Length: 254
Ligand SMILES: NC(=O)c1ccc[n+]([C@@H]2O[C@H](COP(=O)([O-])OP(=O)(O)OC[C@H]3O[C@@H](n4cnc5c(N)ncnc54)[C@H](OP(=O)(O)O)[C@@H]3O)[C@@H](O)[C@H]2O)c1
Image (tube, rainbow, N blue to C red; front, top):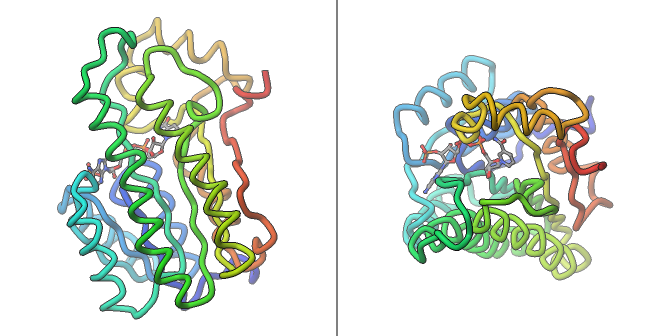
């Protein structure tokens, strides 16, 4: 397991206080990285930091609203001030606040989703990327979605943002890997049992419709996304860049 060790690595996980991000943060902590969690809910941040420390890892939480550029800039400044570097950036935080027909979507709703799911990851890639370039090494992992690979009806802003995130992954890989040893990859989960999908999973009709399309016959669990992230974060994944790994119970195989 040595090749997956992350000792002395500094990692930022956005939305690391619950759901998929929390599972990722716990795993990075266990692998030896110092993990910085960035999200809005400070109680959950504190709780997750405690859990990571209880498991033998090191972590701290920074309150950050990714909808605000100044929060993003000060997050990166704060981490660099504390550690002097950033090795791993996991752009995990995301929102999916509505499921509705495209003709009903308001401009503000569209902009809110794009701001958190696409603009924030770009700003973080740019800011953390500058630090990684200086350092000559980096791992960026963007948590996209199968919604960025295929179309999901009634989720236009979400799908467009996630497709944009996948494209961003590829462009940054082309720009930064050869010259700076920074790999940029994406994980595209299918439907995972977290707060994000609670609404859909709690409706029997929607839930059954979704389950019919998942060859694995069930929703995923947050911990099932972690292995892909650990691989992309590892030293040994230096030859993997610009890749998109679907972890979706087989949905996109159809
Ligand atoms: N669950 C799925 O089925 C699924 C499928 C495909 C892709 N994904 C993607 O996986 C990622 C994690 O999803 P999840 O299911 O774990 O969602 P979740 O349980 O709803 O958690 C979302 C996380 O994002 C953070 N967040 C949301 N808005 C934020 C903001 N403005 N500023 C800072 N942090 C913010 C939340 O923390 P605070 O609320 O404390 O800020 C929370 O930690 C997302 O990018 C999502 O699109 C999920």
